[in-house]
Length: 260
Ligand SMILES: NC(=O)c1ccc[n+]([C@@H]2O[C@H](COP(=O)([O-])OP(=O)(O)OC[C@H]3O[C@@H](n4cnc5c(N)ncnc54)[C@H](O)[C@@H]3O)[C@@H](O)[C@H]2O)c1
Image (cartoon, rainbow, N blue to C red):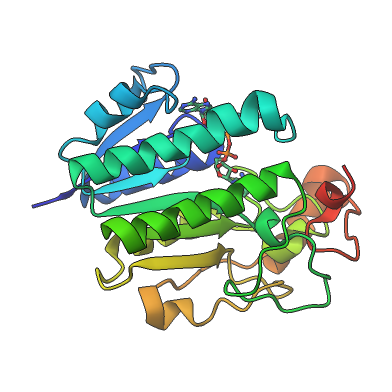
C-alpha cells in the first residue's frame, strides 16, 4: 500500500516543489495543505495553529512533512512563537494522538549560523542559532527529540540550506548551501523512506556543492540520499541571470542573519 503523506505549507517554494515531485513519482498518496485552498494545484486548507483541524488532517497519515511557516522571521512574540512554534507543537501532538509514525520537519541552516565559515559543522554539534528564526528551528528540532524519546515518533529535521525555487544560487553564500529542486524532493523522499529504526535525526539539506559548508556524503549510506547537482556547475548561468553573485559571504555561516 502507498504511504500516505500530509504536507503542510504546500503552496510555498519548498512545499510545492516537494509535493509536486512526490506526487509525480506515483509512490505516495499525498494530502497537500496550506492556509488557503488552491484547487488547481490540489491543495486543501489547513492552518497549523488550529489544533482540531491539524488532528483531523493527521488521521490515517503515515508521515507528516511539516514545511509550513509564517514569514516575518524576527517577530518573536507576534509570529515566531504563536504561529511557528505553536503550530509545530500541534503537529507533534496530532502525530501522537493519531499514531503518525514519522514527522519530517523543514528546519534550517540558521540553527547553527553562528559557526565560523571556516568550520566544518556536524549536525550533532551544539546549536548556535543566529536569529529568533534559527532559535525557533532549534526548539522545534528538540520538540521532535522529545516526541521521539517519549512517544516513539520518528523525527527527522532537514536543515535546508538555500532553496530559491527552481533557480540557480544567487549569492556567494548560497553557492555553499544551495539545494536544487530534484535534490530537495529526493532528500524529502529519502527521509520518508529512511529505516524505521531511525528515531531522531537532524541533517543538512544541500546539493553536492563543490564549496559546501557541510560534509553530507554519509547520507548516502544512512538514508540513500545521492544529490545530483552542484551549485558550482550553475555559476555561469547565475552570473548571466543575476548579473553577478550577491556578496554575502561573511565570516559566519549564517551570513546576513547574524547581523539583523
Ligand atoms: N527556501 C529556503 O531556502 C529555506 C531554507 C531553509 C529552511 N527553509 C524552511 O522551509 C520551510 C518552507 O520555506 P519556503 O521557502 O517554502 O517558504 P514559503 O514562505 O514559500 O512557504 C511557506 C508556506 O507556509 C504557509 N503557511 C504560513 N502560515 C501557515 C499556517 N499558519 N499554517 C499552515 N501553513 C502556513 C504559507 O502560506 C506558505 O505557503 C520553512 O519552514 C523554512 O524555514 C526554507
